[in-house]
Length: 85
Image (tube, rainbow, N blue to C red; front, side, top):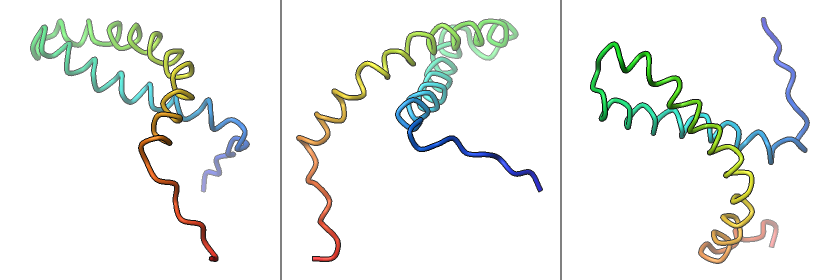
């Protein structure tokens, strides 16, 4: 059995936007590249570069805007009820 060592919890503020940016830019770049080129051999050659560029923009952007997004969400969503009361 393979045991994967987990990162300490203090890395969560970096790991979450890292994973989110990878998944979101992959989906968006696949859709936009397919829409532009169609399902052709050119798609397979073009998509990795389109994804890479979009990820290079998305990851630092997420790191910068996530604190603002958390504040906006806190203004829009009620706090969870306190347990044990």
